[in-house]
Amino acid sequence: MSFKKQHQQAFELLSKVFLYGWIVTICILAAYGLLYLLAGVVGDGPLSSILVYYGTPVLAVVLLLLVGNFYVYHGFGSQADIYRRGSEEEKKVALTFDDGPNPTYTPAILEILRRYGVPATFFLLGSQVDAYPELPERMVSEGHEVGIHSYDHLNLTSLSTPALSSQIFQTIVAILNAGGKYPRFLRPPRGLYNAQLRRLAELLGLRIVLWSLSSEDWMPGKSPEAVVNRILNRVQPGDILLFHDGGGLINGAKNNRKHTVQALPQIIEGLEAAGYEIVPLTELLDKASPEVECPGEVVFSQDF
Ligand SMILES: [Zn+2]
Image (cartoon, rainbow, N blue to C red):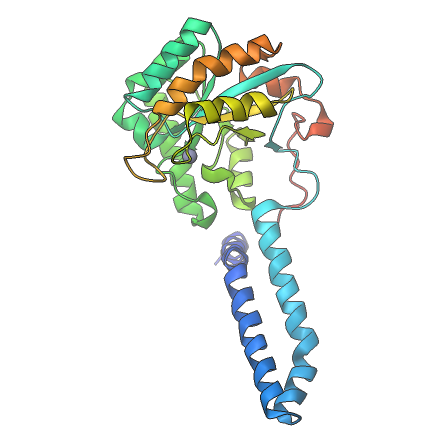
């Protein structure tokens, strides 16, 4: 077996250990807590001696697992490859929509965007693109940007390297087949990323883009007024605003996107009345200053 192959296998094993580190940590803590209680019941004896003797190493292992788990999910230090917002110096924001394209809600949203003449970025699911290939082409021809959300809306941090690559590649192929351009942005479902995803994104020239203000339009029972108020009361210059044009992923078919469609005109009017310019994500990120975690350069020094 080549060294490269051995290294790859070791990395996958380490990733798995740390991804499930929180489960292991809880088990160790629970077992230790139980022993501690038992020691109290039986009083001084061999059990107490074991607890005293192994206390420090056990706590060290727990700490290592917690730190490792955090590292695999988030990395440490500056994360120059993860974009969360644009520059705070200009009154600009970007609209982004996840989970589409959807045959009902996406055309309704595109129609509103066309009426107001504002751009948006759609983070697409490859499976939805394969089902409705006419929509990405329309997005691009109407001046919007498209990015990758994944193929099946899976938690990308729990996948093996081949499964993760397949989620991304299949979505790129679906977008290209549908007449879209090669995507430049990637937003993992629920914003969950790890070192493996970051390396793949770097390799493929994709920028990982999260958000700074969620409309929470996916929450059941959230009225259009609540969505409008949440955005207009909290918006800050440079915000990346998160909406959803696909429905039914979290709470089944009942969770439709009607409220997003109803809220959108008021949100656009409210943002413009407050002096905000709605710009494409590319423009918002390219004008970002390095201190807001959006430099153009990709840095991977903290990954193993
Ligand atoms: Zn999603």
